[in-house]
Image (tube, rainbow, N blue to C red; front, top):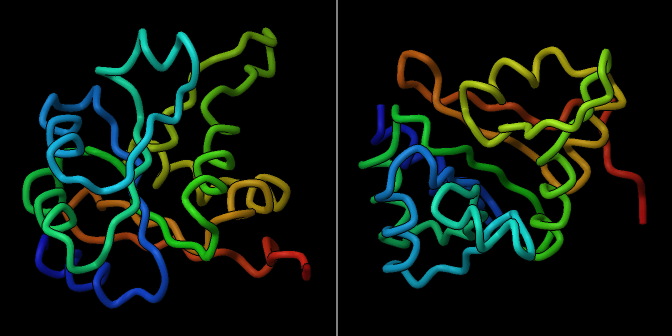
Length: 167
C-alpha cells in the first residue's frame, strides 16, 4: 500500500504538501527537523511555542525527496497526517489551513480545536461538507489525500461546486 501511495504522490503535478500531527508520534517532528524541507507549525505566537511538540506542521515535499519516502514508509497507516496539492505557495497554503484549526460548536458557541489534519477526521468530514464548506476548504487546495482505513489511498478532489474564482 505504501508503494502505491508513494507512486501516486510522485506522479502529481505541482507542489505536494503534508500536514503532519506531531502529537501522533515524536518521530514526526524529529523527521521534519532532520530533513531540511520547508516546514512550519500551523500555530502561531505563544500557542506555537507552548504546543510545539504536539502541533500540526505544514511541510512542502519535493517528489524525489527522501522525506516523502520516509513519511510514507514510517507513518502511512498510523494517522500521521494528510497530504494535499495546490498551485499556491507555502505561505498562502499555511495561512489558508490556519483558518480551520478552530471551529465553533453550534449549540454552545464554544471554540474547539478541529483536527482536520487527522486522516480519520478528514476522510469522514469531507464527504459531509456543504457546498459553502467545500468552497472554503478548497480555496487554496486542489486535492486532499488521506490514508484509508485499510491502508489504501483516498483522494478528495476539488468538487465542481468549489471551483476557484477567476482572478
